[in-house]
Structure formats: structure tokens, C-alpha cells
Image 1 (tube, rainbow, N blue to C red):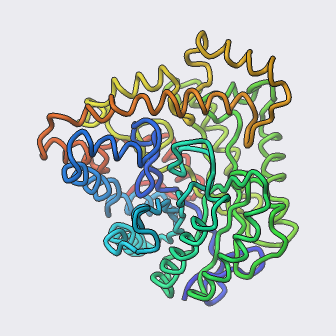
Image 2 (image 1 turned 60 degrees about the horizontal axis):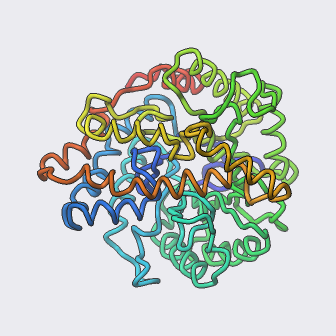
Length: 462
């Protein structure tokens, strides 16, 4: 029997409470630029690589990456830490193509099926998270958006395709006891707030018709922070908040201390959490933090403060009985529990390119917002002077200007340079690049693993 919602908890068939605590498998079936080091958005990157080395050889690399990035060794590590959940972000493009909409690609499920089964063997639940939808549900790279427009909310066609895909997924995983539930749309960003409510109403009915048993994990609007869009509490539903700490971003200041003029300490963390979970507490539904986690810098003093942010957040969640999914499991060094080895084939080849990307601040998640300040500062000043009332959705003019110039324009200009680094490699060398993300080739971030294992009451040895 599958987990289901009972009041403020998720419970098993016999009523045993289960608090889902684990990680997000970012950068796997939904690739992200800061996680594996490429620029811009996933589909544009894949197209550039395919153009550079041919579609067949690009597929050889990407399929091996999907195979190597998560194996039984990874499931054993997470189980040993004490985790019981993995949130699995996926991109719709694995299951349906834009040139043949509504036609399901059966082959696209092979890795998802493999990892769900693998995690179940280790007693770990999966939450399937549709992280990128046709037309893009938010304004940023992580929905595979090459622009700053979330067209998903503007076109019924895109919404029809997502409803259909979830009908297929719900039918496929109906009755699977190790699927904790479905997270249908990651971090929606509907600027008007008018389309998302009716869409959720329609989606919930469709999924329930295909699978009446699995729980739904529904993100609030504006990147899972605004729950005013919900006018009813759907049955067997977890309303998911995301809870990134301001001081934990790449541009974060000292902790405790000021970040962009705001004082951030433990009290501020708790106030923010309380604000983001008002709806859950008022409706008596489970609290689950679908994403959170600081960015690490390599500076021991700064990173010690980032670990303290994480420690404080986990204690706050424990006090409220909240479940959580830390972002993210594996990457090239920014957040992962384990990271690709700097001396391994991938970072040896792409390290200088990633350093250039960092110098330009071309990834939103890794940017301090100060890179190339001599170039961008006059533009920010111009925008502030000429358009003082421009409150661009979702984060305002300062962030929007950076997104348009740094994280879209500059990032897309970097694509040919990244793709060119695949040229001239043999098949064996391409496979070695992908295998750089296998756990045996990675470096463990021991302070983070020990912190998490301590919170979960294990030694972390497995």
C-alpha cells in the first residue's frame, strides 16, 4: 500500500507516521547548468553538443551520464546516512517531444524506472517531480527555459500536454509502494496568479482518475512560496514549500549578519519558515520543505557559517515535525553531498571553462551578482534611474536585469565554447567524462554528510 496523508502526517497503510527526509536528485533527468557545469538551459546545451559531435555520440555521452550519476552505490550511501526519500526532478522531454506532442516515448522511462526500483530496495521512497514542462512553468533555467517568459500559463496546449503526461505517469506508478507521490509542477511562476488555480483543479482530477491512491505534492505559486492560489484543500495532498535562506545564496553575507541590507540570523530563518508554512498549519496538512540548502564557497570560514545555517534550519524543521528534501545530491562543487573529483576527466577538461563561467557570473545559482560589476553597474544604475517603479516578476528589477544580461545573454553566448570541448574525443573519452559523476569517482563533502547523518541519527557509514 502507498503512503497517504492523515491530518498533519504521511502514514503507511497501518497508520505508522513517515517523515520524508532526503535529497533532490538535481542535474540527472533534469540537468541544470550549475550542477554539471554547462551554460544556459538544458535543451540548448544538448543541441549545441549534438551539433558539435553528432547526435549519436551526444546520446552516447548523455545516456552514460544518466547511468553513472546514480547507481546502487548512491542508494546505499543515502540509506547509510539515514535518508528515506529522494525527490527526482525530471524534464518532460524524456517522455514527449515538441515535434510529436502527446505521443509518449516509452524508452524515456527506463532510467526513472531503474532508480525508483533501486531506491525501493534500500527502503527509500521516491517523489517524482516534473521540473520542466512544455512552455516552461517559471522564468528560469531550471525549467529548461531559454527566455524569461513562462509561456506554460499562457497556452492551453502546454497545459493539455502536462495533464496527459501525468495521466500516463499516474497510471504507470499506480500501486507502487515506494513512490511516495507526485510533485506535478516544480516552482510554478504564474505572474498573474489567475491560471495556476484552475490548472491545479483540472490536474488533480485527472491524476486522481488515473491513480486514486498516491499522494500529491503541490508547490505554491511564485516558486513554491505563495499558497493564496489554493481555494480548497485537496484530499491526500501535501502543499510543498521551498525555503532557501537569504544568507545561504552565493551572494549571501555573513551568518548571522547582513545580506543585501537585511539582517539574517536564526530568528529570521524561523520567521521565514513560519511565513512560508502558514497555509499548511492553518489547514492542518503535512509540512514538507521540497527544496532548501545553502551554497558552499570553498572558504572554510564562510562554509562553516553555511553549515550553521543548515543546522539551524534542520532544528527548526525538527521542532515542527516537517519533512524535507535537501538540494542537491551531486554536482561539480556548489552544493552536493558528493562532487565530481577536480582531478577527474570531466573537471580536468571543463574546469577552466567553469572558471570562466564563474568569473562572468553566468549561472544564477553560483553568481554573487557582483561579477563584471564595472560593466553591469552602469546598466543597473540606468534601470534604477529611468524605471524606478519597475517591479519585474518575480524578484524585482535588480534580479531581472541580471537574468536578462548575465544568465541568458552571456550564458547563451558561452554555449559554443562549452560544446567545442567535446570535439576530438573518442567514444572511450566521452564515456570517461560521463563516468566522472559515478560515486566511485567523486569526492564526499564530509562535513555536510556528517551534519546530515547526525541530524538523522546515524553514523553516515555505509
